[in-house]
Length: 254
Image 1 (tube, rainbow, N blue to C red):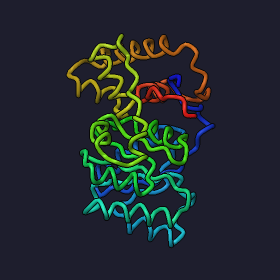
Image 2: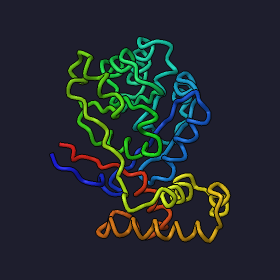
Image 3: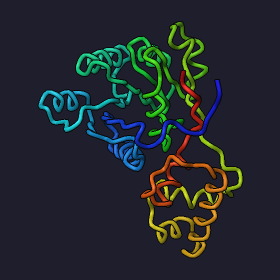
Image 4: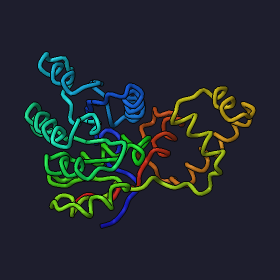
């Protein structure tokens, strides 16, 4: 299997996503990261599973979700998670279910794999890379199962066919030419969406220094991706920087 730095380009992937997470800040952070990536579109945000199902029954979705992201820890037990997955699959046949979790728990991981979820990812492993992870999920074969790196040891101890052959979510791209301060500036500006003045305040430096850091980051990103052709002509450099900074080294999917 070879490795490449991108999935099919913008326009080749178009994912409608529903997010179910009782944590208000996590829910809106996921929405923000997905909103910046043109391949993903959040069609609903919910604090609880019953809110999602009520919206589905009421026909409240303008576009039906292709992927549902669920916080596994909102289920009281692993069996409750398994039942929640069953109910989602019954409600929308063919839906891809991605479980996010704040910590590694073998029982919950097993329930997700056995229940037919497509992925189980630790929030700390995924963070700003959530859109790339979901695009990876959408390219997997029906019986494939994706886990993040922090779950590898736990998955290896569990006896389930999908876990024995689980794919591991790729690691983020590394930009070794970026100093920590340049990296901080471009992440605050392009990923977190802070205005340059607020970035300067956050970092305790002058706005002109922030602008210089951002220019250097753009130059580094451009130099490392001279043949990037997947981005539409109307994409601003800030948006392209977001796509590159949040990218994963995604392996080819057979």
